[in-house]
Each structure stands twice: as C-alpha cells, then as structure tokens.
Length: 295
Ligand code: GUN
Image (cartoon, helix red, strand yellow):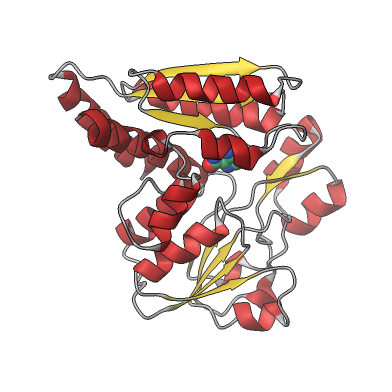
C-alpha cells in the first residue's frame, strides 16, 4: 500500500515537472541518534525515488539553537524548498517547540506547527502528521469501518496520539484517548473495535487489552536487547531468535505479538506495518505543500 501511495505521488510529481515545477523537501538532522539516521535515510531515498528534490542537512549534536533557527529561517526563504522536516528528537539543549514553531506553516512537512495543529483540530485543510495520516489511509483503503465504531488511542503525543484521535473523530469514530495514568486501562481497551497503540513501551498491550476480533494498529518501534524478552514476545520463532543472536537486538512494537495479535481480526506488525506508510505520507504532504504554494 505504501508503494501504491508513493507511485501516486510520483505521478503527481511527474505532472508538475511538465510545468517545470519540482517539489523540494529539506530534511534536517541534528546529532547521531542511530534510529533517526535510519529514518532520515529512508525518507531521503523515498523522496528521490518519487522525483522530489531532496536535501538532507546534517549537523553535529552540539549545534547551537540559534544556528538551527537560522537554518530553518533560511529554508523558509528558499523558493525551491516546499517542505521542511526537522527530525525529532532534537538534542536536549535545543527547544524543539521553538524550532517547530519557526518553520513556515506553509512548508510544514510534518504538520507539527501549532497553526497546522489548530487547523487539524478545527477540521480545516492543513498538512497532517504523517504517521496518523498514513494509518487513516491504511484503514480506509482496507475497508475497516470507522463511522460509529469505538476507537481507543493509547498514547497522547503531539506526533501520533493526539492527531490520530482527531483524524478518527473526523471519520465519525467515537474516540477515547488513554494513557499511562488511565484507570483500568486493559478494561477500557477491551471496549475498543479499533485499538491504536502508541506509547513506546515494548509489548505493553497484551491479550487482556484486546477484544476478540478487534482491529489492532501498532505504532511502537522499540529495540529489545534481552533474550528473555525475545523468547517471551516471539515464542517458537526460531528466525527471530537467530536474528537477535546475530544482532544483539530486535524490534518489538507496543503490542505483545504472542498474546495481543492472536485476538485481533486484523493487525499491523512491527516492523513492516505502519512505518512505510509514514514515509509515503511525507511524500504526499510534500507534493501537496508544493501545489498549495506554487502549483
Ligand atoms: N521522529 C519520529 N517520528 C518522526 C516524524 O514523524 N517526524 C519527525 N520530524 N521526527 C520524527
């Protein structure tokens, strides 16, 4: 499905090229976080493959905040740049909210700017955070019913939980946002027809959170380094254990694959679930920002 979306974007980019217009994406990476480096490389490669002019700006972890602000302001002024993405997390000495707010809302690839978050809240057109947008697209294209269904989003981040809840509400789902302080979290989750797990804790959502036949969307990407955990999450999965023994770690989502997935009618695995859709949606946002500003 991500491939199909990327092909749609590529064809949109090609039709703009006939008018001499090339969408431009600038990706900003500060520091050496290995997961961020992998994400950024994936975003860059996908953008180039779709015909988008992609530029990744890499800075050392010690970059002063003022210099990052100046970089963002330069990209705001650069006519060839339609979309700006500052990879998160940023180093602790940099105020991430200040940086995200400095991005021109018309060039906001992630939809993280408060103006665009507000537009999303009010149901107005705006770039939408890529992971929740990709999930809505996945559910819609797969024909998962949303209208009137009970959806529980576990996690309240600005990047996933909150925008996810707003997009599900826009699709007429009845939405509850739950989090680590929610009383009887398993009981609440068991009421959900659609359960979205975005809390960042490996295997946290176990079978007792899942109503039989529910749809499960696992947004977590957690690196697990204990062999006992791997044996618990992937019992009898020789390939996973072998890969763990070779690499010393493996990826697990927020759902426990051993107990949660078997209760679901459909679920997204980790890896290979919603991740590729996030990247596909970034390309879509870039194209749409280009059309809106220059098209
Ligand atoms: N870090 C993890 N996910 C994301 C994302 O979607 N966008 C940005 N900018 N940083 C991230």
